[in-house]
Amino acid sequence: MKNIFKTIIVSAAAFAAVSCSGFLNRPAEDNYNTGNFYLNDAQCEQGVNYLYNSPWYDFQRGFIKIGEVMSGNLYWGDSPYLEFTTNGTDVDLVNMSYSLWSVNGHCNTVIKNILASEGPTQEGKNKTIGEALVWKAMAYFFMVRTFGEVPIVHNNSDLLAGEYNSIKKIQRADVYEYVIMNLEKAMELLPKKTANFKDYERIDYYAAEALLAKVYLTKAGLSGSLNESDLKKAASYAKDVIDNSGRTLLPSYEDVFRLSGFNKTGECLLSWLWASPVKDWTMQNTFQSDLGMVGFDEFADVWGQWIGPSVDLMNAFGVAPTDDPASRRDLDIRRHATIMMAGDKYPYFWQDKGGFDYLKFLYDKDYGKGGPGAGPGVGTSSTGSNNVKHLYGDAYDHKTALGVDAGRMSSQLPTHLLRLSDLYLIYAEASLLTGDAGTAKTYVNYVRQRAGVSELSTVSFEDIWKERRLELAIEGDRWYDYVRRGYYDMNACIAELKAQKRSIFDGLDDVYKKFYEDGTWDASSVTYNPKNDNPNVTASSFTLPFPTEDVVYNKNMASDAPAEHVDVRNEYKYNF
Image (cartoon, rainbow, N blue to C red; front, top):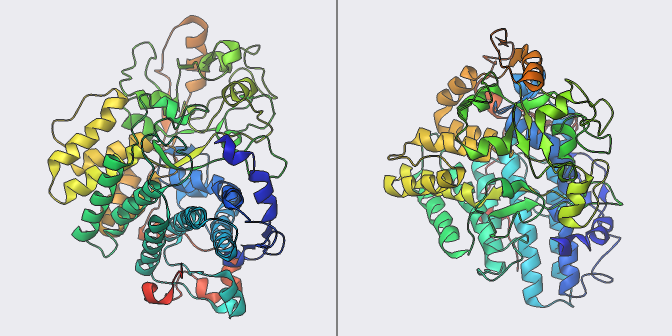
């Protein structure tokens, strides 16, 4: 990972984005080019490095709000994402959209420049072009699941030479085919790693194949009913990754989300790899600022104390904020790694202070004085919990793990987009839906074994559906599970979302404080406030609108504008 980062500043600076609207956002092509860069294989890698972070930066907040707040996994105040009222002027939606188009534009430019270079070996060119194609496919995979029908910008130059203000949306089935086409081409170019290959952070053949498996599982229900051929392809690609990639699950679930050792076994197939410290903004992870508690680090850059995992997610884990910590039936290891609750301690946070004690942080003003506002009662959200994933701890934790400094809104903690445990569950679901319940049970139980929970004797679709929620909670994925299931089972999705406990408790702070002070737990006065329950979710909620300014600029981006069918394989080609 450090090898990626030590050259990333050069490549990020080389491709500063040109500010323009939406899908026209593209990197400048006149700073570094094939005449003064891409002269060897190492420079090709440097030219691709920044695709692992910088163009994705403005997607960070949308990643959480769409993936987790909309799905009911995370409480974020009176957010429009919680209430299904997000419109085209929402700043996080706008930033997300432009970020994804920026990824596409940067990938197109990198591919063009590497193809035009003469110094690198063919192997070096193939590998780095393959990496760029996977990131391009990932951007479109997010776009089609978020916005539905979207334009396809295959080549920046062709777009700018044409009537770009009249570009049209392409039908969803064709966009999925375009994603598949890019991944298939990437797999032709990328090397296959073995168990002896330790640089798991870089994208290889199996990372591309893993994403392809997930795309086929998602696409399988697009027509309104499940397509058995797509399901079998999802199962086949997932099985190949599982059997032949050399990757295994990390023994400890919590280690997946820590600063050091997160990818020793290659579990994390596709991740944003951030840089810290940084001279140039957008290369760093800033999730801790939104999701951590005031005073969690020394940089006065954390304000997420009022944002916490939802009551519904806690209930899915079999716990509640009103449970006495001394007798709480906390059987699933993943709960502690995801949801910070009363009584929890974390040895990997605040190691210079002997570990992080949640209630001590809230109610001991000397212990919790790491930043402005820290002290009694300011830390917990109204759901009685706070986040664990996406947090790195304090400056000491960061420096001890990586040997480099954190900074204000800047860490190097990776953000995982696709993990091997996800592939196990993809394989299980696709197998179950094509009649192989035995395989489904085996791979669900592999995931459960690591979580420390009992094995299931039989496995249903609902078992896998719930297992995905617990395994991948707060990783930006849950809403997209609803989207893909909504393609063929919309009523079930709407009913489940309406039935969630998406709101807050009143009176928890007094209970927590008394428990900290004298060990007494009495939650009898605590009441649940259902103000955010039964949201107004409809079938139209499963597709978010394009940014309003894009629609004003081009009426073809309007929600009711028709989308064109394109023969993707003939219309868009890669001549390499």
